[in-house]
Image 1 (tube, helix red, strand yellow):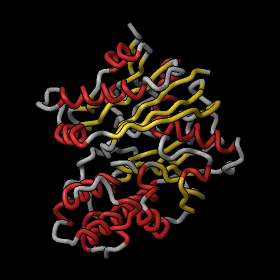
Image 2 (cartoon, one colour; image 1 turned 120 degrees about the vertical axis):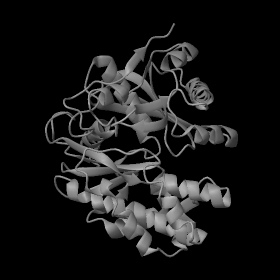
Image 3 (cartoon, helix red, strand yellow; image 1 turned 45 degrees about the vertical axis):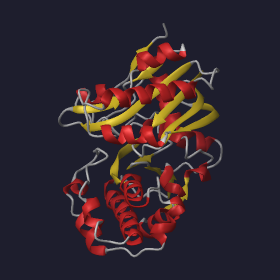
Length: 365
């Protein structure tokens, strides 16, 4: 077993999550400490300014430096880590075009921390024809297998719904022998999640997010906006499929005429509607949907999901897992898989033609 530190900075652009996990890259032996470093207002502004830019963009170097330095500072508090999984900061994602871009240099992080770093997890998948996202599904299988062993879940299909900036769902069968086995996983991005809500709060109220969903809960949904949103051709695409953070840029102008509360409520309804639309692609309806990511703290989102989905909707903590740190843990687990040459994605999760081991390894110097 290897003690790995996974680090994740998502498209919500709120900060860096870091979490320890002990694993052989297949099964989870145990979870360790975790920590969070929030971005300052200035750091968040720089990262927002670099969104949509590729490696040659004018703001990318500064954004990459913020990504590297913030991760390095947080890693210092985890001297027990033998290996670091570094996702970097996604700035652009266009698997059918220019590829995928996560700012941050894993080699520089390895030098700064004095430990080997696994990074650039998505590029190889995209190079071989996959979507490059989502990448947590194989880890979701490991989490379900662990939760069954701990008595937190029955041996039955379950879905993990991650609500970060973009939403993604993973249907898993924990009885499968491995995550890359046929029928073990199906995953895809469902649609925009927290990003449009957070952007609304930042632009109108100078707040980072709708705390607890209080604003959305006080508003009224504009059904015409939601109906038009759900006509987007993305929802008719057969998965696996993935999205860029700003793929649904039309949502912001659509809710612009609405009051703050009504706009937030409408964005929540759009989120729930997009997840419900994705259920038609699942192999079978799961008994439970385990919600992870920041969205599970939003009471309006959870209420909307419970109304929209034909399954029990629960925060992932009901299965004994940490919903705030699940993605960070995923990249620790994936780092160990890369070290061992095991697949990190495959046809049913990213649409890659075969199971692929993505990621680069930078040794400490």
